[in-house]
Amino acid sequence: EVQLVQSGAEVRKPGESLKISCKASGYTFSNYWIAWVRQMPGKGLEWMGIIYPGDSDTRYSPSFQGQVTISADKSISTAYLQWSSLQASDTAIFYCARPLVSGSFDAFDMWGQGTMVTVSS
Amino acid sequence: EIVLTQSPGTLSLSPGERATLSCRASQSVRNSYLAWYQQKPGQAPRLLIYGASSRATGIPDRFSGSGSGTDFTLTISRLESEDFAVYYCQQYGSSPWTFGQGTKVEIK
Image 1: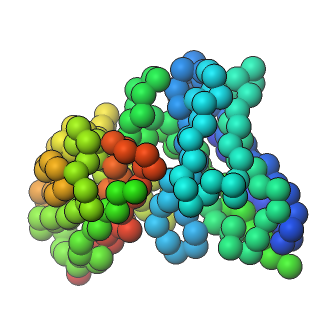
Image 2: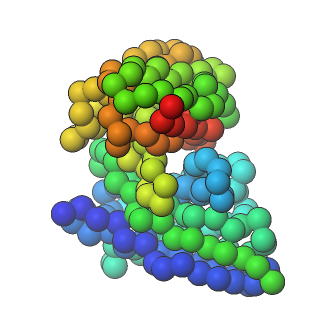
């Protein structure tokens, strides 16, 4: 069974760093792009960026370039989203998602359960 | 960046009625790489339609997608109770991939 399992909810203070994870199983991790999507409280979906674990090719939305870092460790089939200095405005649910077709940019047919990140002093 | 505008913002309908949701792009979506997702409270989005008109695995045939270029439509032929949710369109033809702001389908 194909699954994306994300790390648990996090509470941090402004200025702190954070790295959340998305562990894949049931398919060849290296062969599929993995994206990160933000959903702020009560708001819509925002595409943040995407990584190809096979060669670590990474693309960012201009809105998130320089604000977050996306990485992957194909040895443990895990993708990451990290912040070096969180702000209150980073409070949101973050989803990882996998496209339909290997090696292609495609619609996302597999989603993680989401990780709630709360940033508050 | 392609901006997707969904309308209406909220659709109030009764079970059994037909729902028509619109997604308009600020520029042509390459190869009709347009998807529709359903999201219920507390859940991750679920893929309904990809390539503008192809149903994802396990999606009932009351869901259909159409359109090309800049105008796309999601139709739910007869609403069932489990269809009341928020629906998002997304284009994946041009980077950055973008989502519409969502249409909420609520029970009238």
